[in-house]
Image 1 (cartoon, rainbow, N blue to C red):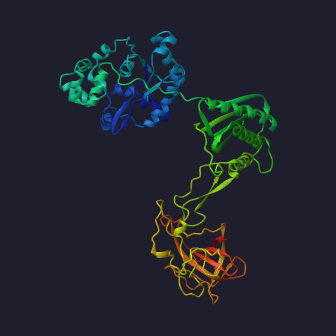
Image 2 (image 1 turned 120 degrees about the vertical axis):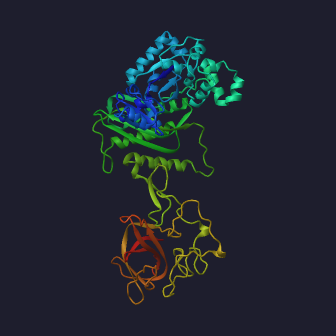
Length: 567
């Protein structure tokens, strides 16, 4: 039994985009007509016509581009409506779906009664015109649906024998068969199967089976998705946390039992609530493991506590008590067990911390607990992205956050980021060999022992990025600073990235100047020069001060700014 919706690409355009299907409408693909409305056919338009020829036959033609995704989306309600009456529906293509006729025939008392019931239900539910054909195969049922015909059992070969070879839907094969004098499917089916395969190939052999009324495969029925959502309605609104927690326990156990019955487990849970005043609340909880019944109940209880317990720093309390709760398993996977780590990677301490942070999120919102994710970028601020706890940890920019330890820059004395001899361990990498009064200028080069060339990562490079170690504190807003040389004059950077003088003292804000005992740089930055409003041209320096502090400074448009602080 096959349900066919005529001119489905045109109907889908009307459903999704509001194109009136009652007028002359064509759907084009590769500049040719693939579907047209009944009004367009009355004006002489047929499938396969070019766009210009179709517009010549009907000047008032409405042209719609072919969109297979649109056809599928619009056809899903039709399939769902058919599944309301019968089980085991196979979607042949957008606009046609098939089902084994035995079950509906027995249930509705005959093939004609089943076909009428399905057509009526689809029309009432989806407001879509359809026809049903019944035959001994999907191919024959599809041809029978075009005339709304019911082929009796065993009569499929005779029904197909009088149809033209163009019904196979293979224009090249049909043209060849007609030139050989074979004009009907019956003539084609009468040929020996071996000769058809040897002369015309595999696809023609498959068409030969269809012409004889023998489908090449059984129905591949669509299994309707299991209904996993659980909900509960309450006559008395839940406005106290203890009453809501008691209700949450029973609802969580129902959800867990339903998932276990299907061999599934939940990793992402949606909590929905409706108040007596119609206010709708929704929150999604994520978990890096599998949510047990206790874990589901805890998260539901925490969420209800966050909704019902108003207070400073918390979202506004609902205007009325909760009358409906709904749990939606948003992330579902097969329950195959979770292997704990050998050294406590998913042990009790981690679970206890996760429960605590998740409860804070339930009380204050998902953005209240964030974790840092390192990625690509030139400045320390660009390399860090804060994501809510439990969300997918993706960097803001692709790339590694820094060079491997083996590729860290070294100074002239061979140190690898621990600072020059006699300097504190917190000296930024690259400062070795950069002394006040040394007279040398930084070129941003990275010297490596033995002249070894580091292996570049496969991720996109970031020229001009700072070498490790990363600063401990990245300031949310840079602090203004002034840098002077030994004579007290200001230090600047020329267009060729040359310092006007060796830096000797730095003053941050209104603080007194501090002597500079080591420095490294510059690391030039010339970003987004193609966008004038977003362009930035600067140079960064690492400074080691006499009081043991280490700073990351940038000079931009002649102004020195403190961007970060090293430990």
